[in-house]
Length: 222
Image (cartoon, rainbow, N blue to C red; front, top):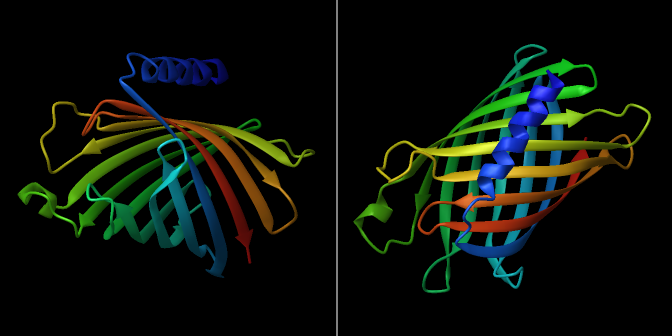
């Protein structure tokens, strides 16, 4: 089972690295707080700033809230809302709104924590260059993630793979975006965590481009 998982991730990364057209580098800064409201119901609040153009410009910044309900040991449901401001073609920042619903599954195999997430999301713009911009973007997202748990060590490495599928607009490709991530979780204390990760993101629209991204996250649990 472990060899199959590693092999699948290897093929996925190899596919992402074929024929890059445009390249960029960015750093994503994230901060998040989580609190269990009642048994099995968790609320989280997050903020982020994302850069591009070799990390020299801010692409977007946002605040996001989420409710996550744990059905049982292996299943959970979540819903979230994000308010963000993105840089547009006129080099000014305009608001966007995003709603998403998640269905999550997880299972432990030895020291591996394996999980899958199906996300249905809708994003609305407020800056319009043509009629198509007024139509919300609706996507289905599929993510697979594997975390290697190290009980006697504060660092847990992980890797994930995600695909974006457009639902309400016709494009030349079925997959609009791919993401491969490799990173590690570091437990500072009982309630404080840090994540550092590398992401290779491939966009097929509006242009065929690859982005190398470093993600830095601080997480606090109440």
